[in-house]
Length: 331
Ligand SMILES: NC(=O)c1ccc[n+]([C@@H]2O[C@H](COP(=O)([O-])OP(=O)(O)OC[C@H]3O[C@@H](n4cnc5c(N)ncnc54)[C@H](OP(=O)(O)O)[C@@H]3O)[C@@H](O)[C@H]2O)c1
Image (cartoon, rainbow, N blue to C red; front, side, top):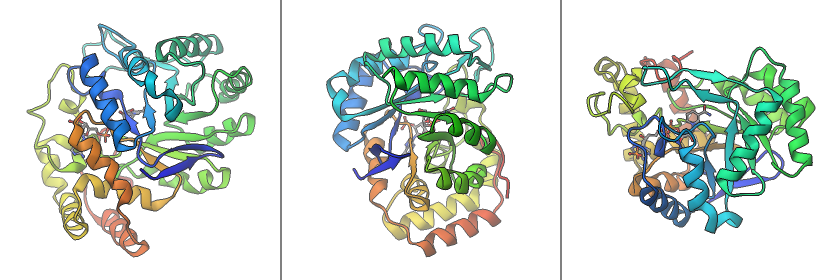
């Protein structure tokens, strides 16, 4: 697969693999055999960028994702970039399917988190360590100072921030250079495009999470009825309701037309669209389906011209859409 550079020097596959769904929020967690199979196929497909977090787990094992990923990625350690995150945990006592987040970015918590992640991932340094959410009660400068210390100590080599705005990015970067942000970004969630000038100016990459709007943009799902109400967040996501399918008919048609034109799938067009925007954008779709892993990887080979990009954006700007998990269309 083609590669891209995040920040100054972090080389990653143009499409990364989001590993969250194998442990959290997308139905029953994968067992080790399934995990291993997905990861070895992903390696064969050219993925070198793997995304996890200390908090991707479930009630039985709150760190399920890191623990199994660490085991199955071990043989490939020297060819892959491992990104993980600190600073939140889920309120497992909640009865909601999408559990509330508890944010904690105190230096002593980060210190504990980094040691836990290194141990579970069975590595001696983390390639990209993100703050998962900003804690408005604590200065971001304090977190950035801890990141600089961790870099100096060799425990991490790069750091980043997830779901952040311009002010936090600029203040953090001034203390310790940020390699990438990881924010929600898809054709249905474009509100962080306003950060592009800041990211360009500071040479910070944009890792796009939920780039398929949680799978919706693939067009293969129809309604929430197939999603497990206890373990699958999609069962309560607004874009999967029947009403939303009606509201998003134009969006799905746009993707369908473009897909036919390019001999591609809707999911591939959704990924190729963001890859074409900036060469420092890296989507990390999640999948445990081997065919879709391959399909998503091939999106890196689909080229969209400036003109095609402009036409898609104009259509997206003017069409009605439903809400999507995480927000509503802003223009
Ligand atoms: N920083 C954060 O706060 C944050 C938040 C959310 C997610 N993330 C990261 O971003 C990654 C991706 O986000 P996400 O999993 O929420 O959303 P996503 O990648 O937009 O969608 C994942 C869903 O789409 C399906 N899918 C993937 N490729 C497909 C294809 N080609 N055709 C049809 N369906 C397809 C997957 O199902 P199958 O498995 O059945 O293919 C899965 O249900 C996560 O794994 C995680 O690492 C970070």
